[in-house]
Image 1 (cartoon, rainbow, N blue to C red):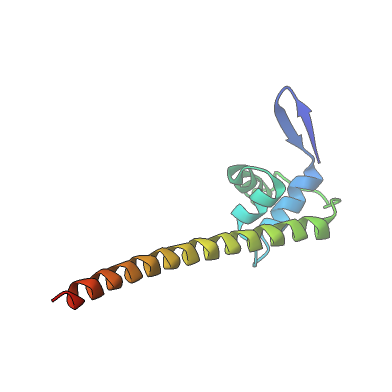
Image 2: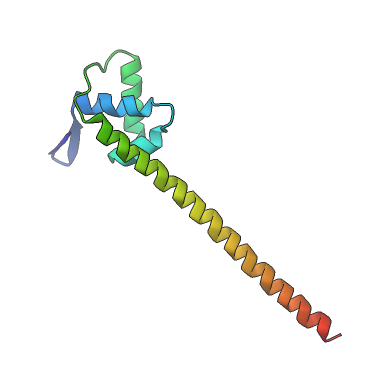
Length: 111
């Protein structure tokens, strides 16, 4: 997949092609693929452009099913994170609403 060379990572053509193939899948976003494969989204976008321009060619020898599962997991994780954030906001709003209502009740009962 990748080799280290003085803090510089190089990827095989097969890995690049697999990444591009996954990023072009209609149900995956480039960002999800990049996160799952631990590469920068700009790098993946560059590889997609290279493929469109005919500069990146070759067969996919990587285990595409395994990579696809990683991307699916990453996509689900992002969805869960969004849902958690929304639920936390809703919870905070409910707390504020309850606090406000209890202060209103205290004010109205003393009148």
